[in-house]
Structures are given as C-alpha cells and as structure tokens.
Length: 298
Image 1 (cartoon, rainbow, N blue to C red):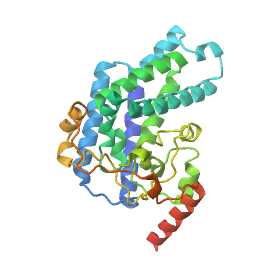
Image 2 (cartoon, helix red, strand yellow):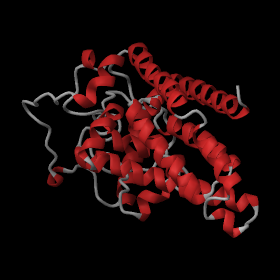
Image 3 (cartoon, rainbow, N blue to C red):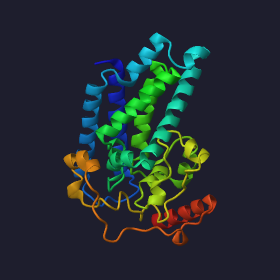
C-alpha cells in the first residue's frame, strides 16, 4: 500500500474515533433515530465510494499531481515560488473549487438528485460527513483532478488538502457541543459543526447557505453565510422533507435514490421569512443563543 493511502486511512480512522468519542461525551443534540443502523449505512457508503474510486481512478488526485509535476503542467510550475507558498496557494484554490462545486450540486437539478443522498440523513453526526453517492464522488474527483492539472499542485499539497478536507468534513458534521464563545471564534478559521448544521436544515432557505467545508471565508465573501438556524440547533429538523422514511434510506436505497421519483408531500413544509424567530443581527443572534444555552445548562 502506498504511503499516501496509509496516511489518509490513519487520519480517517483517527478523526472518526476522536469525534465519535466527543459525540458521546458532549452531544449537541439528542438522537431521534438508532445510531447503529445509520452508522452501518453511512460507513458502507464510504467504503463503496473508496472501492469505486480505486477502480475508476487508479492513481487518483495524487497521480494527477505527479503527472502535472512530470509534464510541467499548471500555473504554479511557471511561477517558481517557494514550496510552502505553492502548498498554501494550492490548498486555498482547491478549497474554493470545492465550495463552488458544492453550490453547483445544489443549483443544478441533475446534480442535486445525487447530492440529496448526503442531505437525506435525518441525523447529523460524524458519519454524515462521509455519506455521498458514488456518482457524486466520481464527478468530484474529475473536478479535483482538473483543478490540480490547471493549478499545478504538488503531491505534498494534494495530500495535505485531502487529509484536511476529510478531517474537517467529519469535524463539521459532528454532533458535538462547543461553547458558543469558542464556536464564534473558530468560525473565522474553520467551519464548525454549528455553522454547517444550518446547511442540513429541512428548511430550503437554510439548506442553501453555509456551503463551505474547510475554510469558512467563502460563505462570508460570497454572501451565503447564515449564522444560526431559525428554530435553534436543538429544535431544528435535519434532513429533507421528502425523505422521512428510514426504511427507504438503506445502503441499497441510497444507491438508487437519485434515480427514483420523489415521494409526494401531503403537507410540504413552508418557510415564511416574516415568522423568522431569530433576530437578523448576527450580534443579537449570538446573544440570544448564549442566553438559551445558559438556561439549558442551569
């Protein structure tokens, strides 16, 4: 097994174990569905994706970086910057592309059908971060390889980015409680679980925000940032209104979910901005959230 695969597997298992323990010690929300069933489904999807990627892309992103280096492809090969500068630039560019790709998967109906697999999870924990449809993963890899070729990212930059993206995806999908003051500061350097949980709200207006996975700046820069869910983190509903039947959300069910007609909603959830119970000022939202948490703790 190649060294980069060992590093990524070790990082994956380490972060998964750490966040799983944190979720037990200090959960943010109480689970409403059996964790064991969901974990089996989500981890099975992750394993399926790993196998398919290995078959379709023998060398993957690392192979693309090695090829770009051998052929001198990409902008960074013409700039001759120090290695550490090239690594930072490559990571930032790749992360921006992931942000843009995420928006694309929400805005284009054919891609949204694939991305619904991720959002169909009715709970929000560390394994939600690895719950993706194989076709979405293949498309993501094609975009990533193209970006690596254009940028000329080095193998070391790609490896660091892959580990970071995987680790932060599991971190920001975790059901962990972080003190609100700490969360507020962390949001300037990394996407926190409270920040990304808003994106998994059943309310469409909240789902279409907070698209960043790793670096949190993109949502603020491009106007897609949302501070808090309108119903609060403890009372918000996670998932999609059309998919509330756990018997449909099996491993096989998720594989075929994009190709099936959506169930008809008898009483679809509607969002009225006039009934938005959270104040619009970020400062007021934070103060209200702190007050709510203090009441819960006391």
